[in-house]
Amino acid sequence: MHEHYYELTVKVSSHHSLFSDFLADTLPVGFEETEEGFIIRSEDDLETIAWGLEQFREALQKALGVSIELETEQKKLKNDDWVQLYKESIEPLTIEKFYIHPTWSEDNPDLINIVIDPALAFGTGHHPTTASVLKAISKYVKKDDSVLDVGCGSGILSLAAMKLGAKVDACDTDEISVKNSLENAELNSLEFSKIWEGSCTNLEQQYDVVVANIVADVLIFLANDLKKALKENGILILSGILDKYEDKVISAYTDCEIVEKINQDEWVSLVVKKR
Image (cartoon, rainbow, N blue to C red; front, side):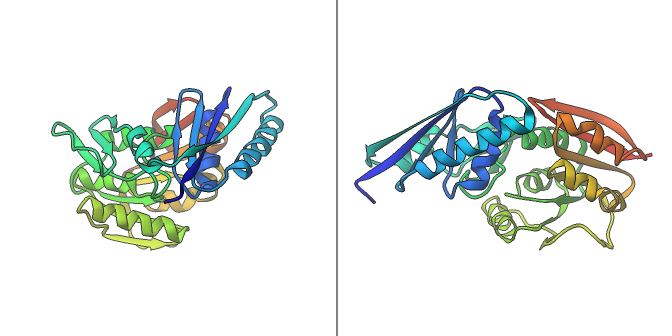
């Protein structure tokens, strides 16, 4: 362990979730979310991350036509045990029937426990899109349902469905996400029916529930494949949709009935079924 570490404190005035997405895609380490922004700790200098955040802020302002205030401050601190400090900052999360917590926290005996370490991959339940889909899974997935998780990421949505007794297939175009999903399944003593690196095109099987927490453009691009993957009267849970793109996504699913909309911050999740 190095003698010192760096701590970058980030404060943003708005659009916290978009900055969180940027950091999740950029950082090789985990980060702590605060009410005002984020705290990033690393044994490597974080000036490049601070510069990247400033560039992201400028691009976001132009794209959204808004003004966003950003403050960053880096400190060099004595390295007593920054990993332990980070662990202590991670709070377990309750979403409907589920209790999501890292390996260093105790189970909740009254809820369905999902163990997942934040550093492994994006998808711990703290992001609004993940939280919304967990609410939908809690409501719509039943024992012995067949479920497909498209863009599985950390595997948290698959794990939630498995914990409810569903048989789950999953896919992701990112090799690391597939690996992390398998690791998290093992951590929870669960197994995928199938999991593969790739997309959901040309599938032979149909499912009771299909989950896709991706981004609006990909949900539109994959609309036909996602609908083909559904059994008759199957449920399709769509997420990763910024509210300004909601109508655009709905237009790709006009042959489906909207069963429920779940709004959180600037994000929308849709639960739809074939008409």
